[in-house]
Image (tube, rainbow, N blue to C red; front, side, top):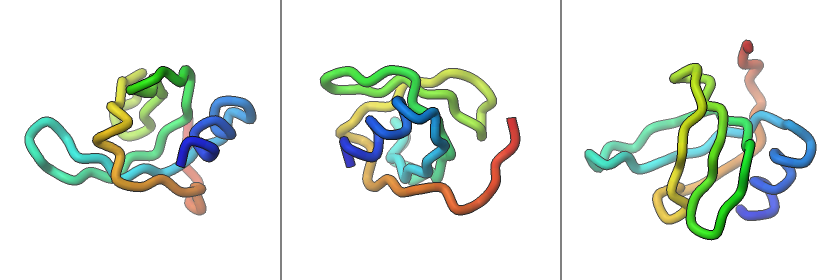
Length: 71
């Protein structure tokens, strides 16, 4: 998963993640990684249309985006 996040950062690629929120809800997010840190990722979230922080431990899975997402 770290390789995919790094590739999103380096190539400015959109990816999809499945994430557990603070309220224990699983959400699907299309993101583009802006910064990688030891325990979290700063990324542009196309769902919220803003820069968000995602804890690495809360990301269940990540994959390449197959669907076109605007912005």
